Image: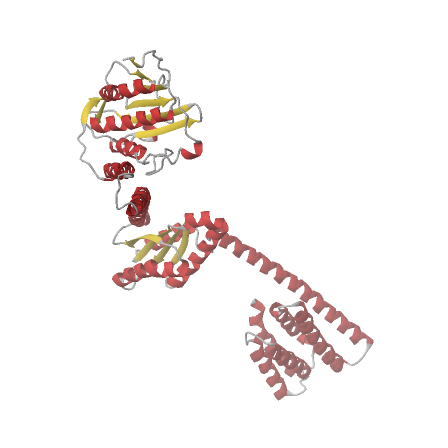
Length: 561
């Protein structure tokens, strides 16, 4: 405090007055006690032993001067002791010791009279009151200073991580850029944090952000500033001594150390000022562009890895299903051959069964090859009406044999798509056969065709036994079937054919009501190859009005075209 620097003048003035008025008890001791008090007074910090020495030296100086004019020195010493007290106990002990020394020396100098005694009590009371007021003033000032410091910290730092916030980071970066000093800006993004929030909750995500802030402070102690740039992004500014070495060191730390310490991947972008940008905003833009490029590469690699894993999973499922389907007829053939051994290896009794099992394996492998082997597809612009008419012609005899009715509803205007006609016919034949198998005798099968501005729609609806809701998601899986003698590849082949033509196949069904398949194809436009319609193009309900309202014919084969 300011009064500390008045202490030497006050000590010199009191010593001079004591000498001038010839009240000095011992001159050498006066000089020693005064110099010793000043020396101990200016030593900081002051531990307990040093404070005790200071009080004794002040008392000795008071005794040597033989004057009560030393009261200001006591007040200054008491104020200094109050300022250094860390607890209430220490505060009372220091004040009490100073008061005891003053009282003892004053009574010894002035004598033991009632006047002196009451005056001493008054002076000590004033000491205590002044110390109490000074103590509370200091406490209030310290509290105000602390609140201002916390307020300033909260307005410039992130509450969660303690790093600079977005606004303060931009302000300081602007100042640094105005000084035209070379610096490296690093923007980082915690790419795995969102998935960790889903797994561990927001508390776990916040804990990772705190750890990330600590790791960055450890990895870049030489940084000019570190900021939580926003959300799961961080920013670091470095002043490089050697630019090439700094960039290499930063990449190594971010690529290796962060993952080792936190177990999360980070993407980052770096920009150098003024090499890559001449202003603060251009510097941030350059770093953000490189961050976006790295994030895009990371996600592409991640998608590629997931796609490869999915392909391996599908291959495993196909192999497992194929092995299971082939093993059943092989087991039967093996059993028949073992029985023939007891009959002099004559297989005459089991020959039809053996041939049926072999035919079943041949059919299975043929369908599997058709499903899995890539074929060259030659797209031509052709109307879907021709495919439907061909399917009806091929299934006419089968429908009459089973007593089913096939009703078609097609527009007069051709619905043109780019197609391989044989594949579309094969897909429709599979759906019609499945519909025949699902219906009892004298069933009704409806095939309707419609189009809008962009798409053509084929609806194949039967009135059979239907499919359970829990099985709807499985019907397009290879080898899934509800038939005793089915291979489970028919609908998978249908799905693949529709997908090859850039279309979409959907199904809805109710038990004992029937099943409806809706196939959507993009219309042929200027010879463009087919592509899968987006949700915005197809709408939430891709079926055009009037698709399910076709009239019902009475003949076994009737076409309303």
